[in-house]
Image 1 (cartoon, one colour):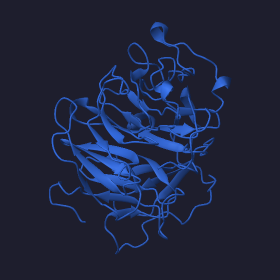
Image 2 (cartoon, rainbow, N blue to C red):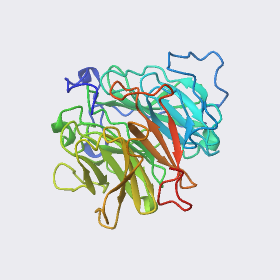
Image 3 (cartoon, rainbow, N blue to C red):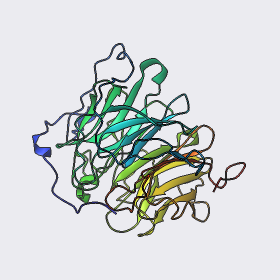
Length: 373
């Protein structure tokens, strides 16, 4: 499921220790941005570098598959929706960010995020749009550097500023889940770097779901919202701010967890559902109504999990898109009830088609009016 085997934790010793509130000491410092006026938002620079890629991004065959809104990307991993209905998509290995349109217009390259290190299963792993984007024009990204995993923010074409640094970095299990909750706080999913002990260590940011404000400061008693996770590749929010996490693993079953503040998912808090090995490789989650949709890399499908009250599945696990587009990663729901889904066939494991990787926009089978499958 992962590109590399577990390795030693990379260079965390060089990170300065910071202090959280109420005695909490994270493994790396919080470095909030200074308060004040938001950065000026301008057009992307025309001189932005363009790294190598398999094809020019776009939707090449306008008379072809109506589910495909963009082609020719290289391992698109982070995806977030803009207020105008388009999406920003990040390429894991290159750090490139593109704008993709629901009408299948050619994708537009916006910028390249500097400093991304894609060794192991790291890279540009998550994107989120500021809840006040019309005013500040800011994007948030979860990315790996050579020394740590971190959250940064930036206007399109601008220089990234650190929001949260010092998240442990490994050859595997680097996390990357990133979503804003209904209350405007940012949920950050991290991985245990292949060391399960870090997930339950209160002095480590690894193997956790963190909750911070837009400047990187911890919310409430500290930044740790939940603990005991393996690799939180995605976090998604539903009605009444119900929060879920896709938790992947190198061995054994992947999990969908409903997040309850203070819970330890290695010490008693049970998952909503487990996804068997061979059908797993969870990389994305989205909530529509009473169902959670999970992208599966190894399973090459989208799992549909009906959820009831109390953090348990309320019915049988279903699936769709099985084997049709290869490895499926990010899944995000838009305001029209459609799912945006990225493929990951150029990640060194999949078998890419000539026009991979793709971004899909599709109505799930249970949506009104059916699906164009």
